[in-house]
Structure formats: structure tokens, C-alpha cells
Length: 96
Image (cartoon, rainbow, N blue to C red; front, side, top):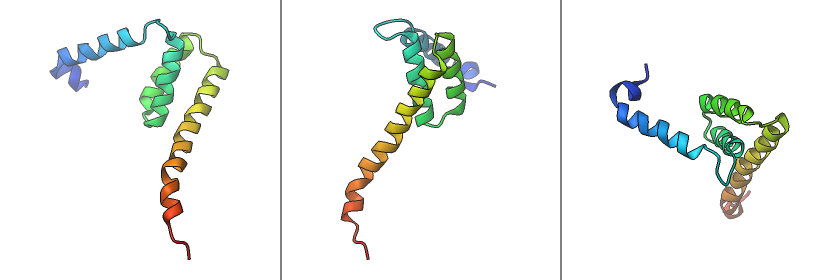
């Protein structure tokens, strides 16, 4: 059951329309936007989102190499900021 679609159809429709507007070709290609969405899906750990956006990226022309590079950037940006964010606390920690 899609509770939003069933009980809040106007809100559901707004989400559909927003997707259509945001993901259309523009300064950024649909392929790039879908790769971005896939990367963000990884970052927020949304498996259904990842499956949808990977499929859409491939449909928009993304290659395995494009996807691999996107995953590499995602990994960098998920891991690197964790280190940078925690570094001050690590530096302030008194080690025995």
C-alpha cells in the first residue's frame, strides 16, 4: 500500500511532479543527475532509492565506469568527512 498516494494524493502528485522537473535535461544531464541521486542514495543508505536511480542512470546512458567513479566519489565523501569531522575530537583526546 502506498499510504501517501492513497491518503494524500495531492502531496504524492507534487513529489512526482518535482521529480519530473528536477531530473529533466538541463545544465546537468539526466545521466549526471541520476548518478548524483544514486550517490546520495548510498550516503543515506536507501537501498530502494539506489536501485531506482542506478537503473535510471543506466537508462540515461551511464556506463559501469560512470557508476564506479560515482561510487568512488561517494565513498570519499562519506569517509573523508567522517575523518575530518572527528579529527578535532581525536586531537583533544588524552591518550594514556
